[in-house]
Image (cartoon, rainbow over all chains, first blue to last red; front, side, top):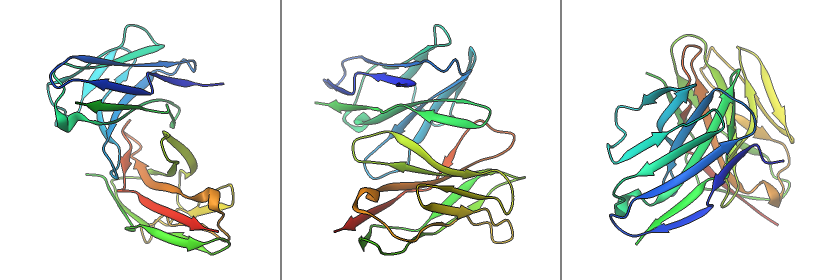
Length: 110
Length: 112
């Protein structure tokens, strides 16, 4: 059974058109993460939540925002996607030192 | 700060060959160490982990030993299969941090 679910798996948007990526979890974990992974690179942490506490990485652009309305759901909002934002976006959860990653959403910006 | 240095790829092997991917780290305190695997088009899966010095993590024929004296966590498999073709990431997390620090990843291709 899927434990970290990301929708959609593939998302196409236009340059400058806001887009939202979704993540849900069935694990009831208190920590959730969003990573950006560009081709042939390591995942780069954008931000994470510990419960409702939001933690932004210092180098995460303002163009990226996140919402966590409840324990199960977390959203990544890209306000004005640029061509450089095309990447795989990975959601993850963790509890007691163990991370669980979702399958990722591949974002294409036209 | 924390950092992970991983052997550069790509690595191409024949089936049943021996695989080693080197990983060294810099961290404060006593980090936990991980190997993740990413198959084409998929997210990351935890392959194995070790939480203290001299621990050996193992899974699916892969092994890695936490060596504090050499700050290393090299991944090994004695006989690879075509299905082991993937990107492998070494990672660490400090005991006082929620964040994973990843290495750059090593692409492994196993040919039949």
